[in-house]
Length: 106
Image 1 (cartoon, rainbow, N blue to C red):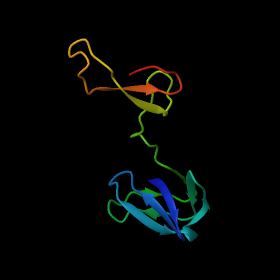
Image 2 (cartoon, rainbow, N blue to C red):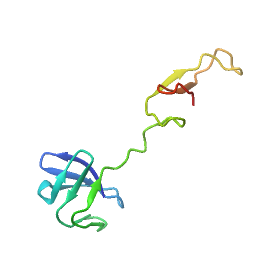
Image 3 (cartoon, one colour):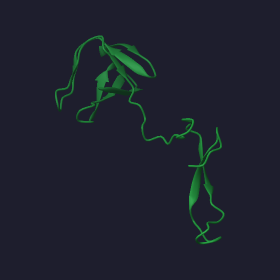
Image 4 (spheres, helix red, strand yellow):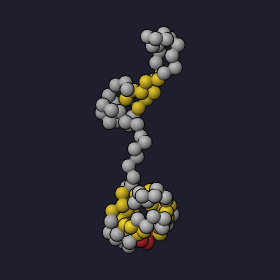
């Protein structure tokens, strides 16, 4: 299971098997921080019965949809329009991704 966030007195957890999102009361957790939570009791997904045992650190899901530079790993990417191409001359609509940190195009 993955920790999503905290809403009022509920901890939002996403099941890693069925990808459904559930809210559990905060009293079932000993620690709730920005990146993880630790549960006091056994938690079970109502849909697929995936079980998390007590005192387990439930971490936040890593965001894989973020574009990263293949050279330095930075997430600071800027889209720059191409001025021309050898095939079409000045009439192109393509863009290049440029890393702000290392200045490489990809």
